Length: 319
Image (cartoon, rainbow, N blue to C red; front, side, top):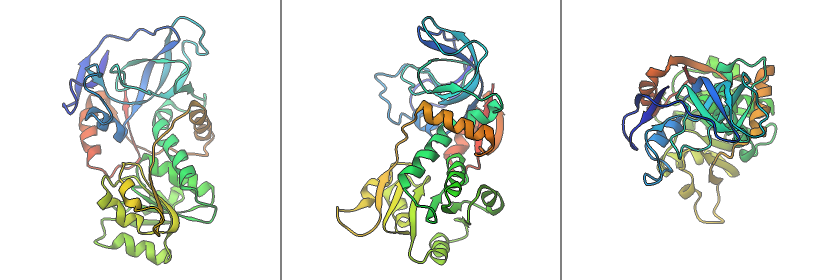
């Protein structure tokens, strides 16, 4: 089968031919129709959280997928051949990813039936972005009528978060790169801020709307405390400032100091949450914006572009 993989951590990803996986007992093999790109994909390929001594290469990139069950392993299994499914691979310890034509996954892992009315292209874009957005909103703990600042709001997570927050009557300030007022407004953002407008543009825009600071911050962009700290400073005392890139820890300061509570967000995905989001997307209550669909062989270029930031919705690979 065709796959996009790396031969070592930080190696250039490329198109390779690999054996089609055979499902073990309790597994299902999925014929993947769509795989979605996430920053997590190139971070994993770079070795983030991985141990080269325990990793089997080639490492197939990717975690999100949608497709149809192609084969059932031995033992009890709730799935049947032909079932449409979506899911998220929970480990790449053995090189299993989703930028490939087939993947075998445990039936009791993060794989759920795709509602019949949910197109598989939308299903593939949902797992990481949708679950992260839902759990981030819970962690931010913004009450109805509160104000939530989202840095990097135009990407998949930010787009889902904007909709989920708006549905709870939370006022979203969406910070993006470039003029995205129309698109973010359609997703429910109350205010859209172009962070490329010049030095101080973000702070000035936030202070104009929220002189006392926002109730919570979700920073999907900053990779270090120095970049995160100015964003956290826009949060009122007693508010919450979250980083999805591990930049918040040192910004919290000593215990008891004034300012927001800063924390690094960690996704804790569950099949129940994924199934709930799939139903919401199928009903039209949640929209997952697709930026572009590409053939699998274009994945290395798309990964390189994603490293540069500024994503607009989700990138899908069609298999």
